[in-house]
Image 1 (tube, rainbow, N blue to C red):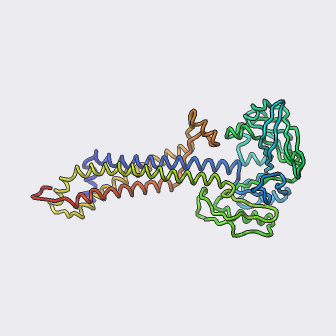
Image 2: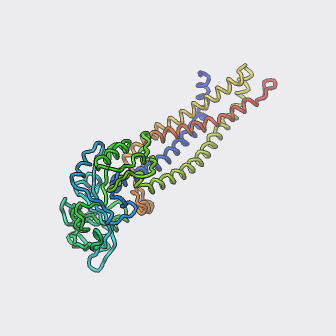
Image 3: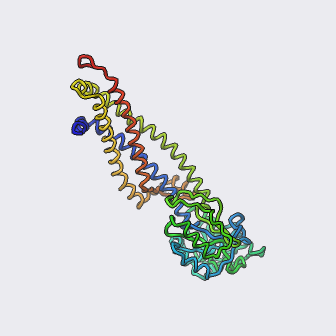
Length: 430
């Protein structure tokens, strides 16, 4: 080990080049993986927090056909009972339907969301997105509209907007709503075609007291999702429950898809986990992950050849040294061990340096996401994503990348091993 340590620092330039190859390889691999995983995790978090929830309760048949007639009835006592379940942090009833919004000569089909303003403060950041006017009160009969919709209808705060749609059991739904305020939502699509009213106003609009399109539930610990679903099902007094439909891996990460053959149901309700309700997004995420693995494979090949080039240069510079060592009596196996351990220590130092630089950098970037400028940011908004670069700081990202880079470095030791084994000495010369 003393000889190995001296050899490492005897030629500092050669050592620094080898370490730099490993350092930049680990640096860029961690950076690429962190940005990709961070972006998708942020998207999923946003959807769960503001739109989907970890668990959704719907009337039977609503998920397959989202019409008013498939809405469910649920009294306030049952909703209050759901809020008391362990691990549940927020219960948000929703009345979601489509309607034609009209003001003056302009009209447009929009998505109407009936919310509890008080519960929505706890669930999402809707009040913080208020651009003009005032937020809704709990029994308000007004409406909040997106800024894009406001511009299209030319309706501002204080104007009266007419909504026309379909009510329960084929009844006509028509009502006037005063615009209380405008909101700047996450994406242009939402800004252009969404409106918020209170749940009592929405139930009156569709003529369905105690009627809901669904109940969105957020939990504190996603690893206890199966347990929480069972408690919710028990609280709904399920008679014909499919208990073996949900298979959950307790060690699964927050964004690892859980296997689902069916959803828990009875004659009145369907209880759906977010892995089911967000299946398309998860499939897109998995497809993106597969493409990223392909790109990372190409990057690893480039990295491998870069490290190999450094090792070849280092080996050829030391051929005379190897000959002298063997001539002085060092066995080839011992020399091979010395060279292999030297390369491993250099690689380990380079990888450790990359980890020491990347970890605080990624923690800082997680707290301070980088805004995307110009057209790139606008493109992200159009695709429903926030115009920022987000990063992930899971330990697996760093461990997997460092192990891969070290494995590639160890594979490159094959070249100096073969070179040492093929050395032929004649009168002290090669």
